[in-house]
Length: 550
Image (cartoon, rainbow, N blue to C red; front, side):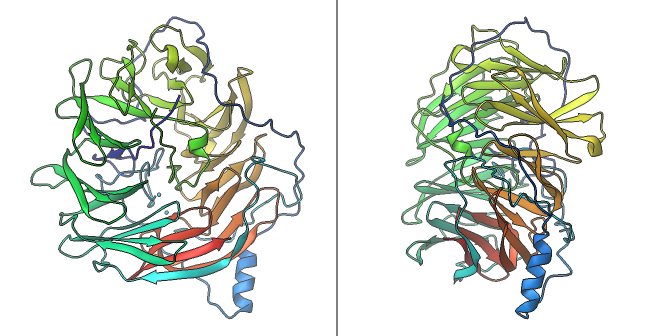
């Protein structure tokens, strides 16, 4: 099964996880009891992966990378940011958020995003022969080196700004006091600006920029006088305006291979638009005639091995001609839709409420039933006919959140007893052996991000990395941590913020000694994006590209 690489842009009325307007797609609310016939569907056959090398991790004396970074900075006479930026203000309701985003701090993007103090020891296994994926060796981490600074085409203000990195191209956006947005494209390998662009025009506010293989998408905030937002597509080679499209305040947008899917919650329909021309390729009305539905991208293992945001949104999602989405309608039916053609598979009744916790990955749809607290897996190839596999039943009064693929044949989730977030646990379930692989405490965990066969548990202002056996590589470390690839992680010394400030960076390949990279200075860290070698960030008055690996 293939997947789309959607940004799944949302407009809504809550903070961060911004989709709780009537008819939108909240995914963290329980509903009424459901009843299903028991049975087991044949699992989809995922692409085989190399077997995990058995090992018994040995952990060396704990290392404090922030203390080491401070010592290095002191030795060079460089001041450190003892007073870090405060957490950013509440994210506006209409700003899209990364899947699983929590209620506080700034988290970049949706798809798509945090200050607190540093100085807590990080226990890193520097002697263990720990390999997350044998085909993702340690990156050639290097001290931070500024590649270039770019002057914005529209002056940077206290309003919205953003950066994106896709392959060897970085994109930057800023907006002036009149709402005029300007975009700059920079070729990283050639070390030169490719183009600047302003034809996206003016809006009362802008929400997001999305880098695509041959285009750049910009989405505005809904205009409060019309409740309409703008989707603007720029040509990736020239920066010229291709087309634009009006969005309702609760619509969502998904991007596939050459196609844009708009989930229209006013008309209760899906619109497949051609990315090159904006022309409508196909349209499909919601099967139950209502405006409400939830649309899920079908991800693949390969699509979750590249760089990702602090809440797990892939920066380089895998896009193919076989991109699919799963639509959950208001009548609880589910159907698989080919994103390129609009071809609809035979629906299945009584699968999930639109607000249930769900994820579609590698040919399966995973649903946590809000009424029975059972975790089910549906085979998407036989969605209409095969019974779901019953994987797990949560204890009474327990909350299950953050369903996340976490390895070739595992699904992970956060389980919380009642509302005691300080007692939250991360659970890894083995889909082949049909049992728990491991369970570990992870206080405050809100989001899980796969890193090869490991999983990163993200709380509001700390992170914990669990290896393939559930052993913590580090635990409850202040700051942010992000996936660079399926074997490497980048740590920030504080959560990410739209305020200008400094962050100490550490490159980590578990099993190796962490590499002190230095201070990332005077940037709006919440705007930063990255690939496996460079960061692109909005600074106070300009844009900056910084190299951290060869």
